Length: 259
Image (cartoon, rainbow, N blue to C red; front, top):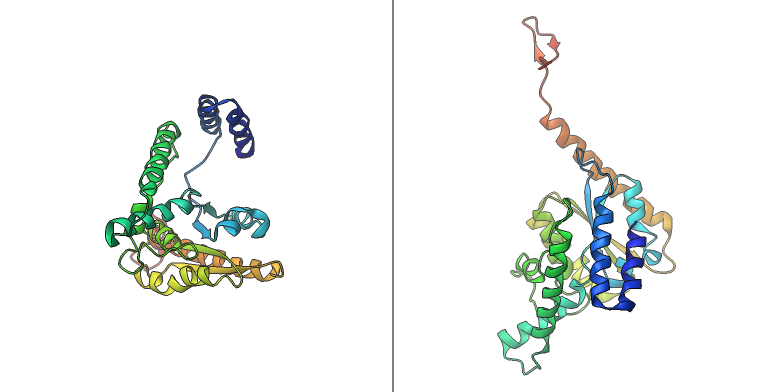
């Protein structure tokens, strides 16, 4: 369904903006027609990292599909964050440090914000849609230990995304990074210790990827994350189950039923 909707929008892009918006509305209506069951939420996992390996399945062993086959709910960040964080860095340099730069970041970031909010008004018709956080909101969770002007690799973006979703109850995170990409290792793996200190109990799995990476090694590490998340979910479910009642003789008896 998703691929079909993308094709609708891509085809409409050749016919003008109005046709694209119409195709987007049609896509949202198509998703509203899908059946879903939210009575039992699957454990959620955020997959973030370097731009290419995060959004190109062929470079990451189709990690999203693998996690979904193993009963996990995958969260992917907005691809627009990738360039909006650079706009935010330039705006900070102008406002906070008096840098003599052309003011185009203000206009570009404002334009993207307007387009995103316009499309979100359409997407809100789906009952499961949640508005995306603004980049400024992502940064506010990590501003006390990462400067906004940090632009090497993904800058503050990965840490901001992890902190944002940790506040929403997500417990598992995967950072995808090319092997040997020093900026991403600093901005990804380098902040995991601080994030774990601020959000005790979360598991953050950095995965190094390159053409020689063994699929077996990636799968083993993913399975460790999945098993840890499953065990935590089972423990949480067991802790809220009512304790069995006991008779006077000390033997347990089932709890009274309401039926």
